[in-house]
Image (spheres, rainbow, N blue to C red):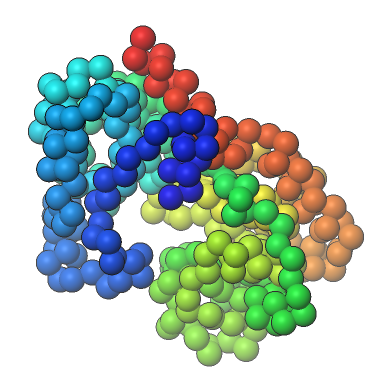
Length: 332
């Protein structure tokens, strides 16, 4: 929705065809049939998105068909779109590692040669032996981005500090590796507060580990980041992440970010100047102890990281202009 709004803000006329039912929520538990189809990599088209796309292609001309997490869309649909509107650019925007079969449905896999432009936030997917080897013709790597209307420093009142604040916090879905890291911190006396789905089994296991067992979005997310002395940025191993949405959103909020170290993110935020980094649990613990004891330096780093984001081309609008420019070149 943030990208849709940003497209409109830069002057695009946007029509949305949802792949979900109107009442669906991210936290909904999937049915057995849905989970089986997911395992088989053949998701159901519950909202008849294929039919609606084909129907729309029979109407007024449009310039770009943007598909995002639209794993139900089939090659036959894209073929019919091209038959009815030969000049349209078909674009896929991927925030996941699409070499992972969990993210690449059989339908999208069959449709790969049909895309005019494949946009990814995973730099390694652009390597010649990854998505191009599977049939992707034009691929564009872009950094993650943020919404200035949502991701900006939050003002906290006294009650907010109690409700959202922490010495060390993490916002994100459960993953075993992440769980082991926060448990390691808690065992060594670091107070950690975790927000997100899937963490319920860790509730009450460690005195220093507070599991909220619910996600936070938008304003609440900002209050967590701004109310935490240290914001952890774990990367999803199953996604081979080098950066993620939080990599940009945390400094955009003005929070101090402690991020898993790799060359890609270090090229975006200078180490110990605009963000801090760790490579393993031992270094994570040492970094938490260090930065919890250095309030002034921590504040300076958080401010420098924020300035880097707001003065750079990290907004959704910046990113969309970059993508649309690449689409224009494909079209010409």
